[in-house]
Image (cartoon, rainbow, N blue to C red; front, top):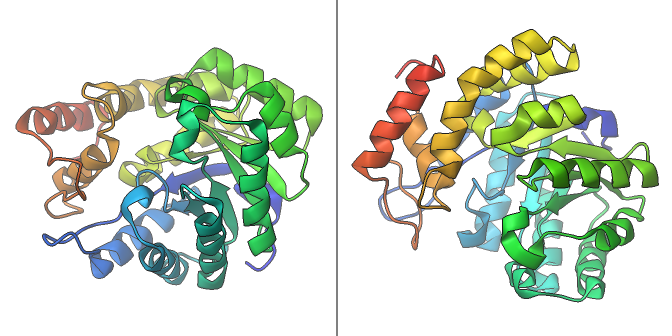
Length: 311
């Protein structure tokens, strides 16, 4: 897809993982299978690669480009390929954006540098965005960081500045807090009614859909793509009884992956879920993330069973 129709961002988009070998290199055949299986699931509109679930903070520039190439090759025609751009300095972010476009991405998701969590001038966020926009012709999504990530989460003033550029078409709204999600959505829709707000807090998707959501980019859809696609479809049809029923299946799994202590373990747990479902080998993650523990395995096994997924 050479020019992205913003309406293509509606619906369920899966944020995928990157399988690793024992030496921590990318297992490209396994990645191709993973991408093909998820992207060909009915109801999945697009793929987010090089996101947090895809370990974008520990992949080098060449690896991230290769991930996009594989996603483009393995996904069906019309599937939106969104590549995350996550770098600590703007020149590297611009280079990653150029590589993603060359590899076949349709749209970019720009993450704020992790250093922003300690505090930053709003001018820095705008400058970071301008470097990426100047390096590519692709449209851009903002990443709305969790409110627990300190100053990395954009405030209202920053959102107005960043969303004013017409090439910024939407936001992956990952505040992970219902009040912040609604406040940000209202602000952005007032500024630009066509602005795409994607509810992406896996644990409160139902609430986000009731408030209003144009779609989702969630890593839970890498494990349960059909379940997540059906969930959004029910919400879009305003079949709230069906949506609530699906939420009851999704919530225990979302909690086991994202909320249970210790934090920051989602990628390892997503890979463990795929292994338990017979769709992956040993869930290897790059250091400094440690391997999945037996306690985590049992919690995930129970949650998958409650969700109705065959272990």
